[in-house]
Image (cartoon, rainbow over all chains, first blue to last red; front, side):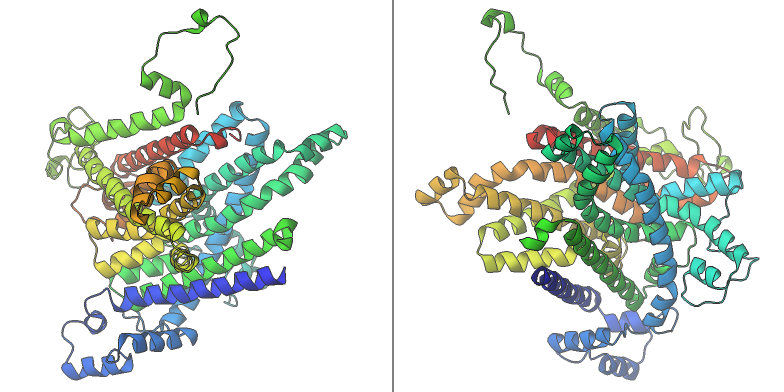
Amino acid sequence: MSRYLLGRIASTGLVLLGVSVLTFFIAHIVPADPVLAALGQHAREEQIQAYRRAYGLDRPVVMQYVVYMGRLMRGDFGVSIRTRRPVAEDLREFLPATLELGGAAWLVALALGIPAGILSAIFKDRIFDHLSRIAALIGASMPVFWLGLLLLGYFYFRLRWLPGPGRLDITLSPPPERTGLLLVDALLARDATALVNGLRHLVLPAVTLGLFSTAVVARMTRSAMLEVLLQDYIRTAKAKGLPVPRVLLVHAFRNAMIPTLTIIGISFGSLLSGAVLTETVFAWPGLGRYATTSAISLDFPAVMGVTIVAAVVYSIINLIMDLLYVRLDPRVRYD
Amino acid sequence: MTEVRTPAVPIMAVRRRRRPWFVLWLRRSPLAAAGAVIILTFAAAAAAAPYLALHQPQAQHLERRLEPPQPGFPLGLDQLGRDILSRILFGAQLSLMVGLVVAVLAGTLGTVVGMVAGFAGVRTDNVLMRITDVFFAFPSLILAMAIAAALGPSLFNAMVAIALVTWPVYARLGRAQVLVLRRQEFVEAARVIGASDARVIFRHILPNAVSPLIVQASFNMGEAILIAAGLSFIGFGAQPPTPEWGVMISEGRDYITTQWWVPTFPGLAILLAVTGFNLLGDGLRDILDPRLRRAR
């Protein structure tokens, strides 16, 4: 167990090292001139020299990477060209909104996807199964930004059932910031109005973002359940006369969750990707929107900062999923 | 894949007329057939776009801007008075090209890396697989956006970025196939008679490993169309006034409530095309991988 654990943590470390190499490559080698990108075309010669010295660009590439890595390790992502603030500060400000949105979308995906998958497997080839598979297929093929627009147009502009873009109505003052997670802050401040309003603002973007993952989770749960339902121990459990719900939920579902967990972890990656588009549509002040507005103004340090943070968050989520996997599946532990 | 059954009835009675291949295919996997029909329709529409389109994709009828669907403009007009149907037809050319180019680029790169990893020694395998792990560590759209931003916004750069983001799946699949196939007798036999590594990989292993790669290519094309549309939507893919579907949605987003047809139809086109590729991928997997049939 501990050997597996150490190995898994070490490989995550290795992957993150690779992440730093790849982002270094993209940020320092691909653009024709990072100095020009940072200072603009009208920079004076001494400014350029000073910038090159400050960022170690006058040294060999390997040394440049060492400097870059050293700065990353200290949490220094450089200064944003657009906001003129340290990128790390910007990231700290925008990450919570994305985590809140991603978490809510994840909940949507699990709350809809897992039951749909289980029911689909139980009623295989019946009408529910067909409908849910068609829904999953469409969900997996849906352009998330388009779905967001449609939902916003219908539920906000037309029906007025739900609030529009943003995390909170502009007429409300946000609760004092402690965690940056609006709902948590509202809870801590016992601000019921902000909490309810924040929740209502979260519904449309979370559903939009969660739909793709819902489809993926439903498909995986279904096929994992079908695989498990064919196993001998399920027949044994039924033969022993155990009640069907118990067989399905305790015997089948727990085992079907093992392969599903990996997919749930991987689906967080598509949530982070989708967040870029969803946040753009819903004017959600998170990392995704920060990344797109930064990229449009060629703010390279900011884009790379978001890229690295996304990779780190995603790798850690997958590491956690793998560790849960070990808890659920004793075979991995003893191998 | 062919089932051998002992005939329970006299041979004469079971001898049937041979059905055409597409009927067999349709029966075997209606899903794949449905997907294929959708994609072929899009491909035909894209190929015939210059003849089918009622207007030039860039032609503006400013006096009739934002008018609803009507004869002559079956899907309505956009904010510059351009015919939405014509733009969708020409957009199909771009989207199918994106899918194809990405699948070829990513498929070639990934397959070669995967085959080499599976065939070469443990050390090469480890290095190559850790490299694919690094690419897997990034959420795909975010890495594609970073690469596209570095290369500069254009549809071509977006395709390169998407290929760079999606090749690792092919590498894993290719490697897994090689690991199974390299122990097979026909591969051993080829080696015994002195075939070179390259010959063994490309003449003997690759043709037998191709099924899962084709399935992946189908999913990859759908994924590429989605990511490309997303990149164009946020400004990193095709640029206006290109009739690309993502660009069309982005340009028409402000009209979602008042002139719903402007952003709705291009989105439907994306949804339908991607559904086609996903259906085809699902169906092909059923046909090509009999092991999965039991679980479905």
